[in-house]
Length: 271
Ligand code: G3P
Image 1 (cartoon, rainbow, N blue to C red):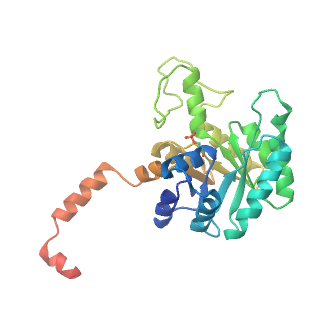
Image 2 (cartoon, rainbow, N blue to C red; image 1 turned 30 degrees about the vertical axis):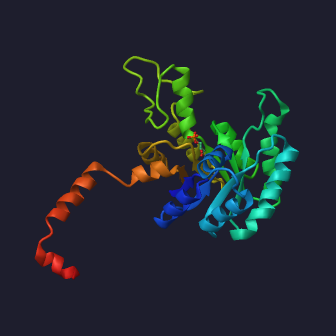
């Protein structure tokens, strides 16, 4: 499984890259907002994004999202992002929302697919994002997307919100943990975000799609473990979750004991 870092904070990207475990970067307008909020006003966006692409480097794709909501607007923005940034390290990927409509019944519902097809035909790689169903993922792949991004954590949120269960954003969600005899919560048969990813992975494998699946909206290390067990191509993981993945209480305890047990004879090897 490849690991992408899900952040627009350059310091986090650089730190995680220095660990030698990062294969790519994903951003979105909310993550850019968080980065800008942390940096304060006056950031030169063009330079900043350029720095991210440069830091990630060749072979490490960086997803940048359009903000337009119509086919034409998204196409124009995607071209602009690609023309400006892909020359830096050949690693710019354009994020297109699966359904760019602010109004559930608008015809714009289909513009995500149309623009994905057009961009893919021009050789511009698309990350088809905000995917919440296998059906959306299937269509994105058929339209030529390089990646599809199912939002695992947000499906868990959706299930818990509908059931009136209170939860914290990072809380682990177990599909069948609703108590004995109770109905298993589901969204049209999907019982968790991991289940959604698992379904998509199985179907893409069955039909040998070239499109890779990026498990997104990842909230905690246990979810990463379950995503890895699905065989998903990529998980895009926030920096705080990556940090938590490095540790275990017994690892700390172990290093304290090993350090206390160093005898002078052994220490002399390193002098
Ligand atoms: O990768 C998509 C991600 O940034 C959304 O995450 O936690 O806001 O649902 P989240």
